[in-house]
Length: 149
Image (cartoon, helix red, strand yellow):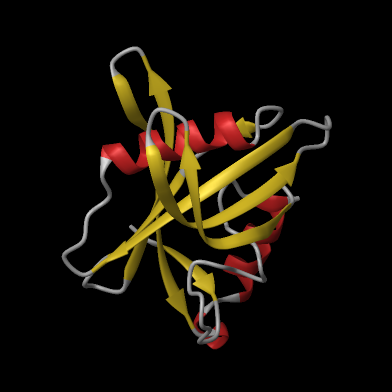
């Protein structure tokens, strides 16, 4: 079941009030769009967006975001390159790659990844459906406020 996200039509549909909705409790801000850089031992890599954040304990995070739609699919190589870019370009921050997959039924699936000894794995997966504000009940809005506070 997809979560409903209150959202008007915007140019960047994975943003909600100018922040990625993943993870929900970490303040963050967008840093760069379509970052292209060169990594030692890999060559040129690109990610769609980069968010940076800091948690309540002062820990810094970098969230590279890959976005795919239509017949394009998220690839493990791109996610591995995102981990490598985080490690090389932001060595003092924790890299937490995210991917957004836009589905045919207007659902957006957000994935967060981890590196394991076996390779890249999905750490979490959430489904969202963008809706008009009047499609959310007062209870749904109250439940959301409780979850993020």
